[in-house]
Image (cartoon, rainbow, N blue to C red; front, side):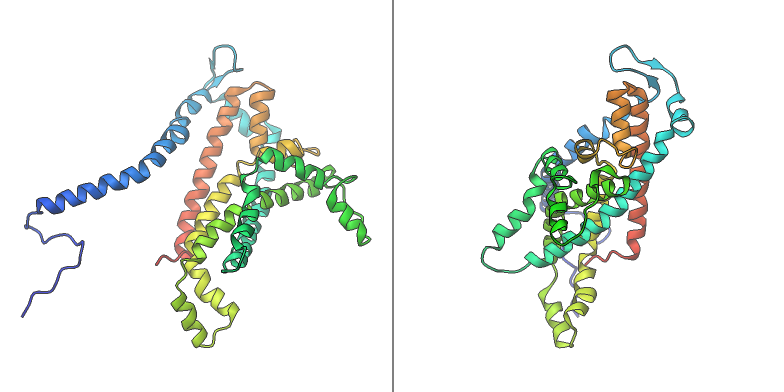
Length: 314
């Protein structure tokens, strides 16, 4: 009787020495892998991880950006949770923006990905046009959106007037101002969502879709029971990225509404910027940045835990 063949790449039996050739191959694979991911890991370490340390130290001081910092301990954190009336409002507005932007942005991106996932003449140009807003400066996008949502000269209200509907004062009312920012954000990022989801769609095995057709499954059934399960890792990735991005929305708020009207679009990052560069409370702004880091880390951790129930890997 012949001995069973060991699976390729499996570890050798205990006690058997690893050959120099296998050890050399493993070392080359390890080096090759780090050459691919090294720049990303290094960039993340330098620009995302290391700046957290001096920011935390700065959050324990009072500093106006010019004179020497003064140690105040936890005073900035105590002020955040007891003496800042705008903090709670900024968090509520940020959550409202997240709830409006993230799910609808992913749905729009998925609809566009399904639309362009075809081999038709000119489809590459159509994809590029959809992706164009994402590579455009957010300041430019905000300026254009401000004109689009203008109640006097805006294209949107002009289109509504043609069908006998009086358009609202989009950027002059709290509810509609937040809605305008959400719509603009979805439009600006729909190309990115489309590209990511398009890559996920192209990884769905055609054999499974053909098998579902043979079993009599309709288009909607094939989408729900075949396509969506294969897309769940991509959807999970987008959910994390877009949630983090929604907590950092700033440029569109600054250009379109400046946090108004009233505090209708006064989000957390805008409050942080206002404290740092308008009120010169750099230490307090650093404390806000630390709290934002903790909030995003907790949300990401919760999403990763919940993903075990609905994300399916091949």
